[in-house]
View (cartoon, rainbow, N blue to C red):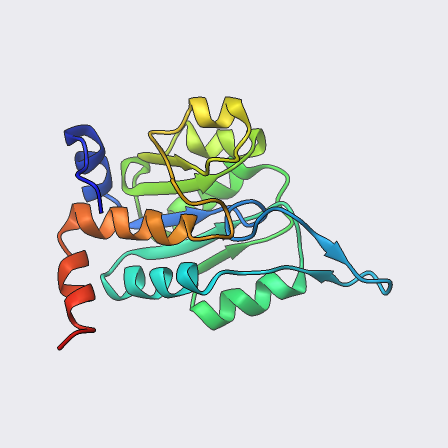
Length: 178
């Protein structure tokens, strides 16, 4: 992994809660709808394992999404995500409620988003992250833009970044080669 700038290192070192949008972040942003109305989403296993490693390092995880797809609820359970806010129109209000539940300050929150609806959280959290395909205005407000696309390892990259800054990544990775 690349060296972190001192500012990015300082921001990421404080993170106690990683918050994610879903469509365009945990997925590639496309929504497949079956004839019966069921939505089908595709999730990347690298992102899932990154979230598990991050949780094992002591960082909580959350999702705030505007949609309410059953497949996301299933993935949340599979990954043991601590907090799940679905069908949210006002992400700022959900963010405030989430912070109260998790007991964290704004500087201790990271958020990965891809569109302007994510900005109410991105402009308030300690580490705003965007994916490369994010809307240009959302990218302007990110402290970090992932190299990997949403649904293709962007979340894993954010997890690795936080763990690297907190000094937990090396030990976590080296555990796999012992």
